[in-house]
Length: 310
Ligand code: ADP
Image 1 (cartoon, rainbow, N blue to C red):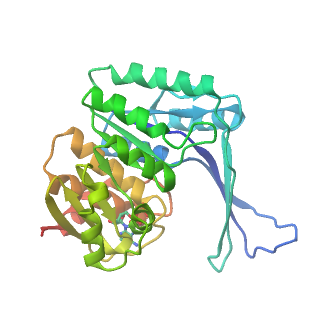
Image 2 (cartoon, rainbow, N blue to C red):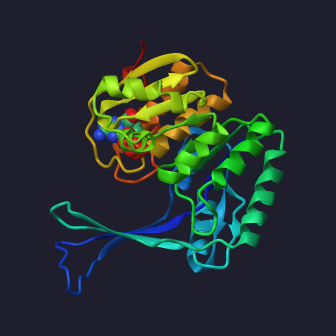
Image 3 (cartoon, helix red, strand yellow):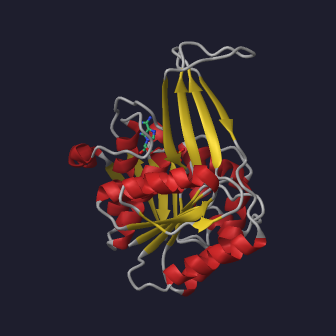
């Protein structure tokens, strides 16, 4: 059983238009509304892999209700904590030229009481013997403090449950002090964490071995179409991936995290964790839908992913 944490989920609405005109009324006959947020993408992929998942986080208002229903439709168990303010809406507009315009709401401000309730709810789950891993993804909503993940990580460490974290900016900077079991920044997230440019393979390698990150047992730096590089304890790995026809890489990092979390609960080798994670990332990029993997193609792609120990 894997617990996912989405502190700031969103109702993602994607509008398809022939052209998008600023300052005009734009109409769309084609739009899709989905339950979004990085942790929810992770939950969806975990479910497709056959894992048992409990999705947690904050939900509020009718937007929150929409997410709760969508999660239920996918047969994912949910233990969300209610918040007073509405869960956010995130809007994407895609025109025929493929131009992408986004409008992201900040999301609800979480009160001290709600934060306490969430912590209580989550630590009750931590106590369950079936919980084998915790995955936290995405940003921290207003009201919670940049170090909020630290509390959740420390509690998991105390209970010896691996805590997998996929976040960025200050939330990541703060969280590494609490030593999560695994982090998965992409190249720009790790560059911002270490406050320097990272472009070449050598620079990625140096980042994996950076003094600041030494306390983290597992670091996977995902490189989009370039695969990934990782340090698991003292071993360094390079992940080489096949060339595919990309439909949308949005959510590939989340799919990768889901695959790795699933293998971690099976106590698989580092190579296996990286290979399954990478395969899920690639499979997500092969579809327009975020957090969807075509499981039928899994075995074929899995064989094409190469893991090299450097
Ligand atoms: P994030 O979504 O966090 O930025 P990445 O874009 O690095 O993460 O993607 C995570 C993984 O998904 C990559 O390591 C790779 O395996 C796969 N992936 C992402 N984009 C592509 C792509 N364009 N082609 C093939 N695989 C991809």
